[in-house]
Length: 359
Length: 266
Image (tube, rainbow over all chains, first blue to last red; front, top):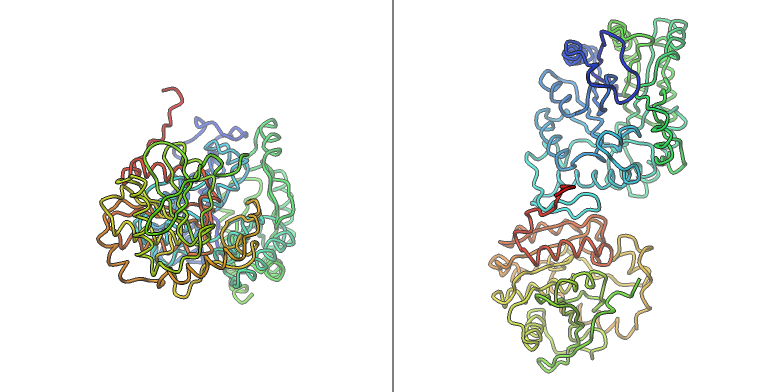
């Protein structure tokens, strides 16, 4: 089992912040912001020492909850200080980006981090559609086309044009080319039928997130079936599971923390009118079965307990889902106390990590 | 929706001892089209291009309703016949478009008469093929699966006349030439006609990764992938096909310069 630490550039607001997304920029504190980005490096160096395999970054907008609107900038910042850890860009929201620019930026990173970049591409959570004015009805198709164009831009030996449905370019000729050939290890992120089929068709990995093990298992089973149809099988490392984790010295402590977490607020709360309208428009599925989109909701925490309990949960997760990479979002219940985060990382690194290598 | 090609009128031209049928529509600069191994089939792509150009789609001798062609020995000879057919229509300058097998024929024609060809458009050309590739054959359903990205969206073709199909298959087998033809490729290296090569990203007849070979060989070649189109690009995505083809015929190499306007209030 490989383990990835999900780094979100934790922002510690000196005063209480408005709740609703988008959060007004005038609430931003510059000193706290600078500290957020400095903290990324500190935590990366810490998990690198503890033996974590990857550090991952994501793309989210207009909120202090994730101060990472550009995951490639985050990754480049980390890359300058990384010694041995792999950086996982999970991932650019390709539905709302220029796919050629995404291909270029990731190819740059791939050359800066020889052999130590992995990439995920995704549609983005429902609320992100508002960031750059993306029509929810087009989001899925744009994602598929954008992913296809990124792969083409990385692999095509000659300049080419792209006459897409959503993207049109007359000239694409990406420099630098990716250092890893044909391209860095790449994952389609999501549990949907479309993500699974795209990943299977292009021999990519699959990244799934937050849902309970049995739901995840449904998606990974579907993915493996589609891969078999295309004549191949993914390795465990080609399935990433991103999940929340709450680790304590004892189970009782962790349970207490979980109670505190229940009072925590949602990550990206939207006003009711916008949320309800988005829920109507955003159509999502797990392996083809309809599911309700998560709009501004609280995500479940599926690993909770003392180290021994977590080891058992990880074994069960592996058995059920087949995921060979855990991408962990360490929870700080009830506060934004970064020393708690460092203790959690240390506890995991020393008491869990050595025991799950062979899982 | 009206049937594809409804506005086209039939004509004939006598050349080289053949009576060659063609379908024509539209006004403007002439675009001569040479069809693929399945014969002449007008598409929505033809309709869209005929709004801006005079489209002349030939039925090459030995295809469709014409008698079996046992006379033409190879593709250079077929190309020479088609060049005469174009000349018989009084065209000394024209744009040339070829589909698949017709793409290879068009390349020979352009190599023989570079001064007459203003621009060359190759739709999924079959001039460079992976070793051992075969032209699509089989039942209409099997053909549709090979030709189209989404066969379920294409109205079923009328069942082909087996005699016509076999006559065409014999001719194509005889004329199609090697998968890589050193003689043609040597000519291509000197062919400076502005060329647009199109491949659908889900072409199941000629893999789209054959596209870069044209770009590497030809001095003035542009390669464009049409996303989510199969081998029959102009049927799968007629608007996307016609937009890029029309832009290229109009502006040739300069089609890489964007004319898209983004202002709301000019």
